[in-house]
Image (cartoon, rainbow, N blue to C red; front, side):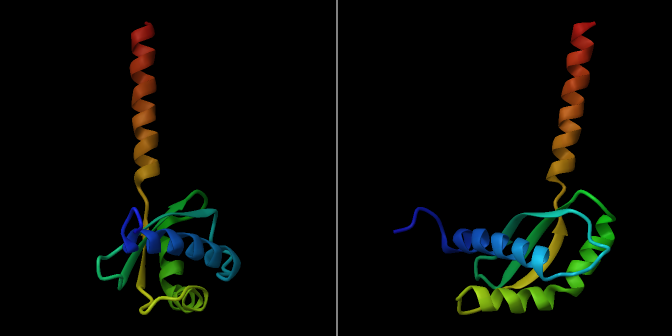
Length: 116
């Protein structure tokens, strides 16, 4: 028996495959440097939310490009993995990096005030 759910295993596999497909198959010069940080699967395995971190470029434009290419991405995923149903993919911006940067900035400010 596996130590975690099938949805968790599938989300890990999808994260790796979606990242590879975006890097190799989605050829749009407007895309900057992006990372697929996480994929959340629904319990019925029919919907996947892919969280994207954008380091260069416009975040809204990146999501728009990826959502317009999600048919190509889903088709390529279906060729790479064998599951009964290929989930529909939704792309979203991952705000955790921004949140972490904000916390780090606040901690540095607190440390600076303590040193004074």
